[in-house]
Image 1 (cartoon, rainbow, N blue to C red):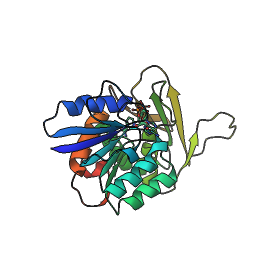
Image 2 (cartoon, rainbow, N blue to C red):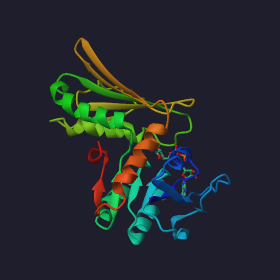
Image 3 (cartoon, helix red, strand yellow):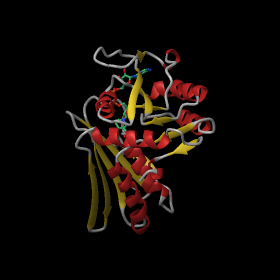
Length: 249
Ligand SMILES: NC(=O)c1ccc[n+]([C@@H]2O[C@H](COP(=O)([O-])OP(=O)(O)OC[C@H]3O[C@@H](n4cnc5c(N)ncnc54)[C@H](O)[C@@H]3O)[C@@H](O)[C@H]2O)c1
């Protein structure tokens, strides 16, 4: 039985995770950590990692970027592996996770869905064929409660394109106020917000007289929760190190 602490247990993703893990025989939620205490939860809750001394095999984190550094310290001190799904992490925080992975196992992905990770692989494969003649633009759409923009997934997909480019691209976030021509070395990233859209990402390769558009649509949050559960299952008991979706797909 894998004992899980959910960090961000009262949030949208925390609630989906609770429902999914509740239906599993091999996984159990032993505690939740969240600034907001949810009266409907059937596990002990704590408002910060420092207050939680419950024994666990793995932490799953869907919280807020500001809450992640303290969680990373906590997991290092207690040697508990952690699946970090929160986005908009600062460069410092990412560096801290990379360093902390020497002391316990960490798994990090800005998108836990199988489809997005398969799309990232496809982008790495087609980019070298197109990069000399096609502009690349990414449009992402999310619900109106999303706090960060652009999405971590948009940046992850841009990084997948860039990692396969011979000449590295500069990310251009929106074009308001710009009056230059678009350069081949630009990679435009544009965020749309509204309603309850769980997440949509379109990568446009626009060349002379032809356009390729690749779109991934998340139809619910279940895909992220299922990916996080698969990652937690993979990570519990693993040797120290940094793991990603590449290790499980
Ligand atoms: N990697 C992925 O596949 C994936 C998928 C969906 C969402 N996300 C990311 O996960 C994060 C959470 O998403 P969400 O939609 O559940 O957000 P949410 O706002 O609904 O939930 C976040 C929860 O974290 C809690 N929280 C915030 N700051 C805290 C702190 N300092 N200490 C303790 N608890 C704190 C909030 O009270 C809230 O309950 C976001 O960064 C989002 O972008 C990642």
